[in-house]
Image (cartoon, rainbow, N blue to C red; front, side, top):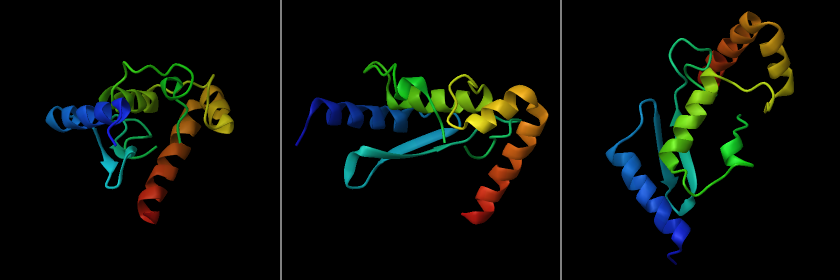
Length: 119
């Protein structure tokens, strides 16, 4: 069944393949165009350089059909470098970020490294 949302996602996928943003890739799951998997590398020289749960307002309260998959993935990548501690996915991490950024970055780096070991 072809709905406007499914057609839109297929167009977004085609554009993403033709002109992928640096450091991100994504594709729908094999059996469900509405379910996507993505790889987003954090910006170089940040604690998220290789991995990152998020709280992104355009995925929640400010959603608009004008956002395509590429812009969403790029927004997530930007959030890794410039987190918003006023709208955190992890309130303890946000507090540490505000109070001691160096310790925050140290802990994030350790968690990222461990995630690669565990996967």
